[in-house]
Amino acid sequence: MSADDISHPAPTPTASEGEDPLRRVRLDKLETLRGMGVDPYPVSFSRSHQAADLDRYYAELAVGAETEDRACVAGRIRAIRNSGMFIDLHDASGKIQIFSHKDFLSAENLAVVRLLDIGDLIGVEGPVRRTPRGELTINAAALTLLAKSLRPLPEKYHGLADIELRYRQRYLDLIMNPHSRETLRRRSRVVAAMRAYLLSRDYLEVETPMLHTIPGGAAARPFVTHHNALDMDLYLRIAPELHLKRLVVGGLSDKLFEINRCFRNEGLSPRHNPEFTSLELYEAYADYTGMMNLTEEIVGHVAEAATGGLRVSYGGTEIDLTPPWPRRTMAELVLEATGVDFLALAGAATARDAARHLGCAISGNENWGQALEAAFAARVEDRLIQPTHVTGFPRDISPLAKADRDDPRLVERFETYIYGWEIANAFSELNDPLDQRARFEAQMVARAAGDEEAQPLDEDYVLALEYGLPPCGGLGIGIDRLVMLLTDSPSIRDVIAFPTLRPR
RNA sequence: GAGCCUGUAGCUCAGCCGGUAGAGCAACUGACUUUUAAUCAGUAGGUCAUGGGUUCGAAUCCCAUCGGGCUCACCA
Image (tube, rainbow, N blue to C red; front, side, top):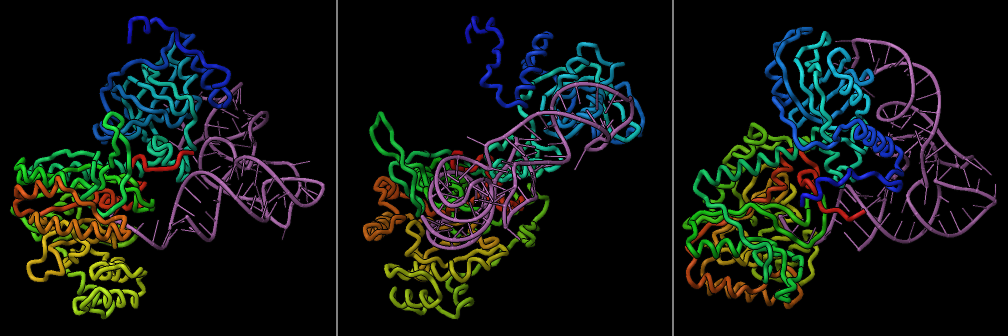
């Protein structure tokens, strides 16, 4: 800003801006305040306390007791009673009542009080007392307008209930709904606890590209964008996996992780947002069994940090996160649920027939592993309410995982299910560059046959593997869904501050 | 992408077998001045999502479009 800007007069509202009568009234008040020499948007304000500090400090203050202690607070006006004599002031910590009486306030301050609206931000200084009705109160000796609000807040009793408005104007949702505030605060605690846990165990936090030239590391359709100077298309990453393993090849750290966004160009649902946050973690010289233990430790740790315990209630269902969690193979779970033993089915065709008989939608191109997965998804997944590690994943659907040490049809991979949702996905990372190339080539064949989500061959990644990736365990945890479980949120949109919506 | 539900005042909601729109809160004017969803009296506020159609007449019935929700498909 140049020096010239300082002398610019305050902008005056125009007629077109004033068409909303409720807003017009507040604009008029704004002008009146300026006319009185009050700056409706001053630069800063020094507080001595937050509301919750005072609640704690004066918890024992007797009803009707007055103190000489002076406190200075700031916040948003949420209610005005008795023509401004009583004001409910809310800050991020809670609520404090303000008493603004002609005996304590200057004429100038009283004139300001008359022009206050619900929603305005003010600062107040004065002695603390507890009213005869038991409400902790500051007798305003001085009152400062900190920001004039030009829009009415939603109704005080029912709040903002409209789901669409809650997501579109999240700030209103946060002002009005304590539950929304608590959900997003708890999300922050989950991420902070996860990060602290990993850092304390010597995992190195890294950042890898969001813009990929080849969208790899998962089976998903990517967003495409374009870089002008390089004149080339780039993809928003669908997973950080291949870059993180390059860092392990480089020996940056034997233990590293990234907590960050992934983007998938797929349908939206109460459990799918186009951008979502995941933890991905790699640990050299570990394998997938180590990742199972680690999953239990991480989830248990963040659950305790966020909720205070290992038992959570989601949609009325009690979920017990106490480790260890059962470890079951995909084939045995399918056998249990359907009586069909996929491990005893020789070829892809018989597996497809079996899956079709179980009611799965089968196109005819599925291989053995895809047929087993379809049967698992249709008949088992939903039932895995309590935490369960599902092992014995088919090699066909796991092009980045090391072959199972006992059964070549399988890989050393597991997914952890809670409430029927995949919460974690992990494997012993495939580090044989020749096998990796063969897996990619098989994916390319599937891709050519029309499988849009088959993973493209990443030559640069295979090159990195040829220099030598140590044996390595890798783990991914979907943070949004984990937070849904820990906050009892019915929709992923509740745990994302600004979920993807069509513009209105 | 498909099916079902949904959109009325700034907010929360009535009204919907057609007859020209209503409450509470918020706002405004006044009263009251130790209140707690303050209270009392009064006032103002609406392209009933949008566009068509049926009808003498549509918030209401029909069609289309746009937003949102849920279920399914895809996926984490």
